[in-house]
Image 1 (cartoon, rainbow, N blue to C red):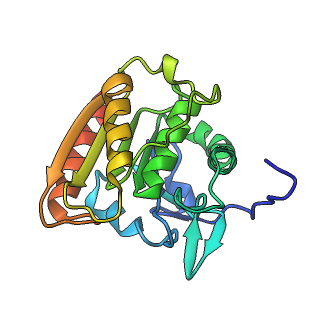
Image 2: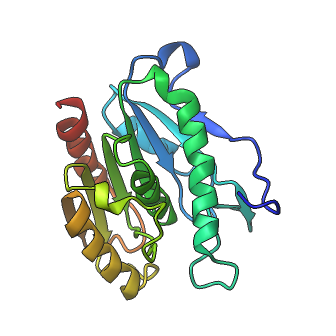
Image 3: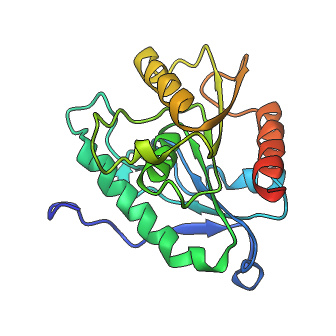
Length: 216
């Protein structure tokens, strides 16, 4: 973390009270650009009840919400900003993971970039990753991203709409190349969803989590 960037204490919303969390598999939700920790928490009721769900607020204010790092097309964007955000999330996960048999990440849009970055930092730490309408960061060979250790064994669900107006073609192309090389991919395309999440997709995510995490 640079001297200029001091992140706030983590803000987290949980699906269960503290006395009901220990011993359950942990699912960490990472919201999209301009949203907050409340944005995805409603998904918890539609996902397998065996999980305890934690939704984490991104550390950088933007407009009415928050972001993990500046938009990739902005002049403020840098790979260092992504790495700082990943360190922030990883530190929080490290503080809670001992109470859970596994940790799975679910990220929407920029949150998918964050989730896959965390996997690339700690390839052995995560049971699975769910990416919704998002992308993978182009790390330009940065050694902090341990892609060579990702041998295709970690399950990753990637759901998107081909008509998504937000995630640009270059991001999709890079992500497609990356997922084919490094994870055990479940890829599903949806129509009429645009840059969003729909009921059918959440049903597929529930099946994925049950099969790839709970039944392993």
